Length: 382
Image (cartoon, rainbow, N blue to C red; front, side, top):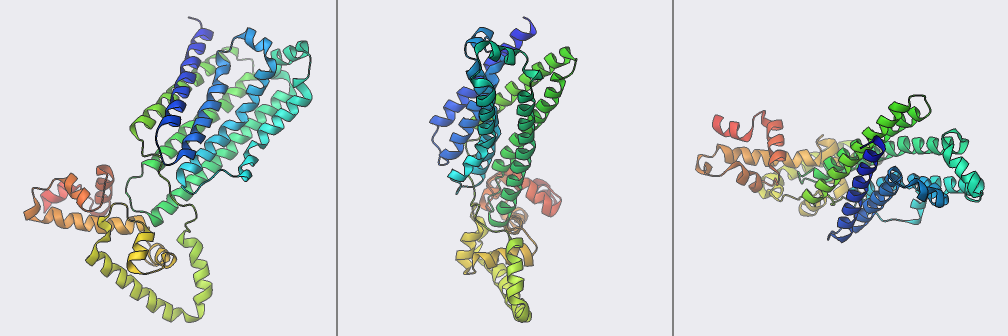
């Protein structure tokens, strides 16, 4: 089997796996359908792009406009992925007319192709296709895709940063699989895309053998990543739970609070001290942290402190994320259970569920953060 045939086989496999996952996402039951559909759009666009590896040369010659349009569709891949990331992170995300701005590069590329390529005769089209690496339109096309990779990589990681900050300040569910999944997939994909930029530089050099092997490596990595997507989707169906993007971070609220209360600072400090005391007493006596999915909104309702004030109180005045604040009480509760000789028969797994955790790895990580010991080691030392 020669290299071209090997590339073709990997290309077919990658496209097949992408379409299989797309079919799964369209048929699986989920509350966040928009996220699934956007990921399906990404997978389909990825499959269309990847099909260029094995498309028959004779088919291309008979359908050159279709081939040029396939090139242009590459400009929609990263916008689909970016919108997918947002839709998974934030449950209140809805596709709106304003999101059509992400299609501007696709429209520009097609506009150029309409003016310069689509209406040429077959001979001129074939000449353009055969010498595309020397054409200014192709240079511009590659440059635009490269700029997309840079801009969307910045955009994706900014969204993930915002998601993590909002999550830590407003939620306590220790399962962080959503963030880890999105962060992992983003890292892996953008590594591939930046490698593709490097590969495209090789296209314009005299290292033909290196260009061929760069294509082999990239196609192999694309196949591995696509298979990884499938395994993740099958093993972690909970990866489609988001948060409310309209929640404010404490640092965005504090400046407003400072401006409005500068003249009554002493009284405000007394109120804050009283609120902190009330909050700590409520956490100790009522133990709301035992609920594994406690949010700052729910605690606000229980303790009768406005959610904005409670967010500033914990995240700013107590200098803790809500996530860490609640987990500290859970760990203290777990420590008391582990030290209790009457509860020696309880396993660590039973204890972590009892105190509000629902993940053993998260419980162990948090416990070691506060005690420098594992739960088992702490029990043995007690």
